[in-house]
Image (cartoon, rainbow, N blue to C red; front, side, top):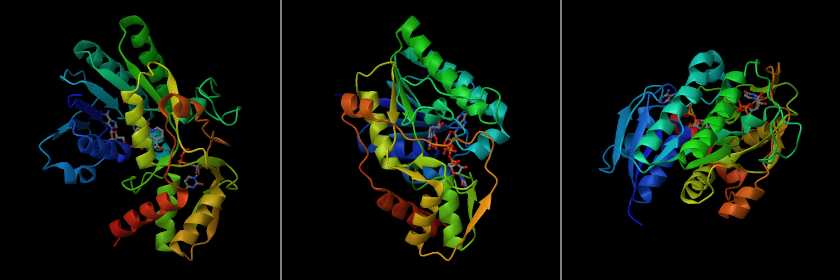
Length: 312
Ligand code: NAD
Ligand code: UDP
């Protein structure tokens, strides 16, 4: 198979930068496009000397044409703090940005992978969540700009597939963590690790009984690439680690791994915060042969090392 020319939108972000690393390591040519809203040059600085890598400042809300074989469309504010501060920009990036990427792929006959999310299930009434579940989303709540934006992105992708036969891949990504998470984006793993390293109180929202299932970034990136390379067209595939834990449990694990003196501090639970979340990954296992390999201890240890070095 010949090497491919691949566009990664949001490539200077957390997941996007790891994806660029992996695609380059596989021998492909990578164009990383980002408007640096939440991403940074620092995440891809180590790639600047690679002649198969190109960094482009650009906004997916603008139309563009670029000769590529594949597009990994990762661009979108992804943490509740960022998307709730900029709801219009967020929904526009999911809808207009995805429309532009679909039109680009239609024009140049490229394959598109859109980064969908477990948020399409909202505060789920089915547990664990399978791809057949339609979700339980508040269309006017504080998370709507993100959740409904991504649901619309999926609908756009399916529509382009039906009407124009554009090949589309739809991973529904569950909570992912690892090095290069934005230091101040308020996501739980980065918050707790930083608080633990600094000996500050660990901020638990609500009682900490809500659950999440955390996937290490290298596992996710592998799943994204396997999905893109598969013939699993135009159907959502959950990608995440089914190992579920409460937020309080996560806090205790991080305190133990950092040998921190931090104490737990309980704060109000944000509106519409999902109560439970766990992926059913049977489809990914069956169709892609994919399942995560990195344990929470290994993944948290690598993440803690990253944040420790960043703050030294
Ligand atoms: P991130 O904020 O680190 O990365 C997003 C990147 O997109 C950033 O580099 C940002 O600058 C860029 N961006 C935002 N708007 C843009 C625009 N209009 N044009 C060009 N670039 C733009 O977040 P992440 O965690 O790496 O998430 C990447 C993708 O994966 C997002 O689409 C997100 O919705 C999805 N996702 C992530 C998770 C997770 O747990 N990390 C879970 C579900 C889905
Ligand atoms: N959370 C918390 N303390 C924090 C940050 C987040 O208790 O400092 C909780 C948050 O309320 C949610 C969970 O951790 O229940 C995951 O939050 P995150 O923002 O990382 O992801 P999402 O809510 O999008 O799954």
